[in-house]
Image 1: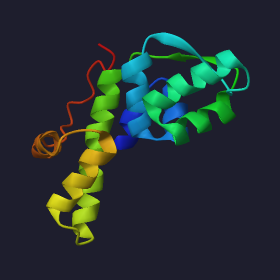
Image 2: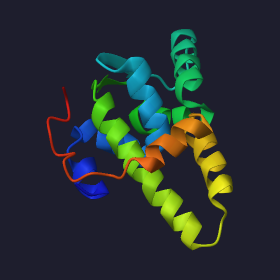
Image 3: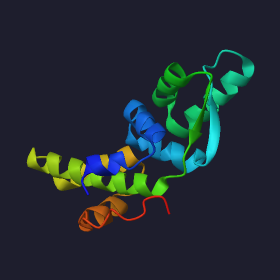
Image 4: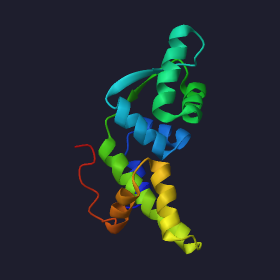
Length: 143
């Protein structure tokens, strides 16, 4: 299963969020708020400011500002789809690693950058890279 097929298997709302704020922030959002409806606030009144700050703590200021502009005052259901997002993340890590190495960046440098980007340890990135992306990733993505 390639990256586009994996992305297509995510719920539409999660795909839309990932396109807007990026995969790492979406991963954190699903891990923290998956299975809940979150009222995205613009941060205008006191309650909105508190909700916006809470979202900022989870996904960072840039991503929370994007969400506030795009979905302000809209309650979003955040699906519990951590497994497909993890698979998608792993495929993306493989893709970014291979591309950077082809461009001449050292593998250690790429792994360190990926670790910071995805909030993982360099050891976890190496483990992901050692596991070849398999074509059997087409199973039940939402179990």
